[in-house]
Amino acid sequence: MSVFLHLNRQKKSNMQNDTSLSKEADIYGRNVSPYFNLADKQEKYKADKLYKRLRRKVGHAIGDYGMIEENDKIIVAMSGGKDSYALLDMLLSLKRSAPIPFTLIPVHVDPGFPNAPTYLLEEHLKKVGLEYIIEKYPIYDLCKEKIPAGQPYCPLCSRLRRGKIYGIAREIGANKIALGHHKDDVLATFFLNLFYSGIIKSMPPILRTDKDDLTVIRPLVYCRERDLKTLAKLKQYPLLPKGLCGWGEDQQRANMAKMIREWDKTNPKRADIAFKALGNVIPSHLYDKNLFDFSNISDGPKVK
Image (cartoon, rainbow, N blue to C red; front, side, top):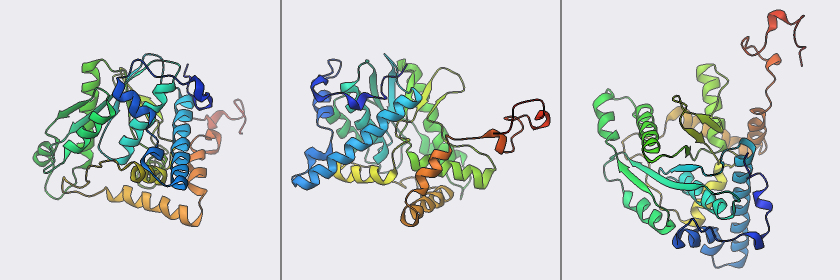
């Protein structure tokens, strides 16, 4: 049973240093709020309010879906983007006050992109103070070798990265992998599948791998991308540049993200309502015969 649902209600006086952390990691986790990066009193208050809101949402997501359990050994997948930095910060902060022990191991797979300043990420991980893994894997070279000219590398690159992280997890005995997908990613994936594949499907908050030996968790699924962008600016994360492979963002996914951002301008509640719908499915009012037995409706369950 997960214990994170009410984690943020703990009194500050009950929060003690996590003795399983190094001194550096404990200090970093204690001062993870962007409050400590600012001088102006009003800006400090606004920044800390944002941090606490994100932390609360992460705690609720973990609790709602039972993402973290006692003695879990969790790889935190670090791409060098804003979401992975925020994910690590939130999990480390929650670890310090969690009533159960679990281990966090940041892992970055270096794909060998030309001129990639991976040292920026490594310098940050050294400051965090957790044991980390940065492993080189020739993903860029493999993509150039296997993908025909003019076609994007993204699908193969993603599969190779994921496979390598799974391999590292098995090698070090980790049982879970935390990914930095947020609410906007979930919605974009849902609409991509809806519009282009004819499938009602998105990113689940938690899933088992095909070999049934690892669990993938997405603790940021309740967080909006706009809040994570603001946090990244306040924290001044050393972001690795995008597009070093020569390909920009996947255009279809970029279009979905743009659509969601437009909603925020014209109907600010629409994205949250759409996300809520993913957890309120009524199979009898859809068309999947595998989920509802329409042919025997007179003898079976009533239509809701």
